[in-house]
Length: 314
Ligand code: GH3
Ligand code: MG
Ligand code: MG
Ligand code: MG
Ligand code: MG
Image (cartoon, rainbow, N blue to C red; front, side, top):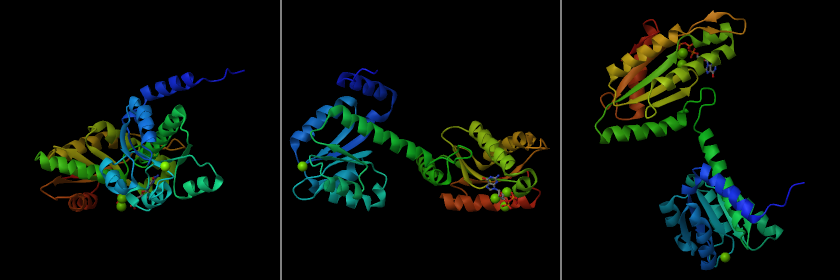
């Protein structure tokens, strides 16, 4: 038999989770027309390190939401002018806040209210009077789920590299930084050679193994501040900070030498090796944004393919 769990034990368990997680610095925005509830929530949540934005009248909801840019939103259901349910509906219809976790507080636990809360797009629901440990547990749970979903949405499943969508964001940050610090960025496209043939001859699993290996090699060959991403299919892109075109081309040629010497084996233990071709461009000389850099590098990639593959041109 298990002993009943006391509130102290729950608090201890939460404290240990909090110590291990990076969540406490998360930003929470709370809207409730009752200042006493806000005071209570402040005294409950602040000691855990959350950054709080408290609002007791929904009139300033939008400007406050935009300014505080919270990781999680807590809404009261019943407020004099606008209900939390109305707010939630509008937030959910704005693509900027699609994935913002929303928790509701309410003294009304009737079926109809609960149903309206969830159909408005809420993620969770907490009864008033608020039980501190329960609220904290629900907040942490939501933040953790959201963090996991965000991570998953940024990663290419096969190689573990940054995916295309995320890499576009990373690139724009990298180029802004380079512009401010007047540094070059080397942009490269890599494309595996005759990869269709590899798949046809040795099977799709063997092909996947090649993609994973190239992903690992690229990850370990460049710094964490560089962009290394799978752009799609058998194509990878790189952004090397503070690196010129010729320097980047040289380093990628070294990576190509290592890669093309790797031996792979298929399910029938047939041995094979694979090469790639690359085209390299330099920011800001060859292009001022990702699109222009991509075009410039793609011209050289095409030339590399046309003139025998297994080479990086820059
Ligand atoms: P080239 O040297 O001109 O680039 O020829 P290629 O055969 O590599 O180029 P093509 O674009 O004709 O074929 C690309 C192949 O990449 C076709 C597709 O089956 C394979 N491919 C794309 N994504 C994956 C994947 O996730 N896994 C595997 N195993 N193969 C993939
Ligand atoms: Mg209220
Ligand atoms: Mg291709
Ligand atoms: Mg092709
Ligand atoms: Mg190819």
